[in-house]
Length: 188
Image 1 (cartoon, rainbow, N blue to C red):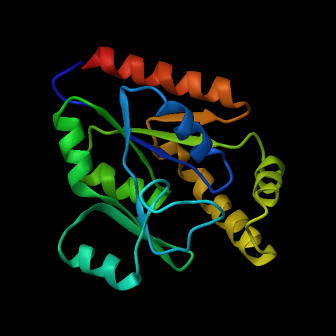
Image 2: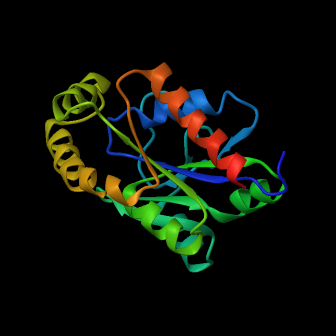
């Protein structure tokens, strides 16, 4: 284990499968997942402290005022943020930490932590993206349309990332990301 762990930012439009990819990656003990905080309501079987730290808007805003987030953003009316302390602690222990965050969050992290490794996950096509959003069964038609419009804004930002991976199959996507991280660790 190197003296300091890597900070790995993984982003992509909603529906690209980034959450599923990250779940596969963190099965490896070398990785820690920065569990984001959000003000949105839990979906389905999501549990507080597992998928997200679910906070009230007031709690979230108090943490913003106390500089408690590494980055945060507002997306479709809800806050999302990466609590600072666990990320700092784990990288100092030599662990590689994955931040699964939105594009605007990545922009903020790269300003403060320019040595982070940024990976953008793209869908094979817009049709596949729309199919994945509909398959969730958790979105209203209005939200699906908002997410598709947002994806059209986010996809061109892939060029600002260190790496772009197309998620056209879970195993291949996960393996490609692991190869990227191995390569980056050899550089350091």
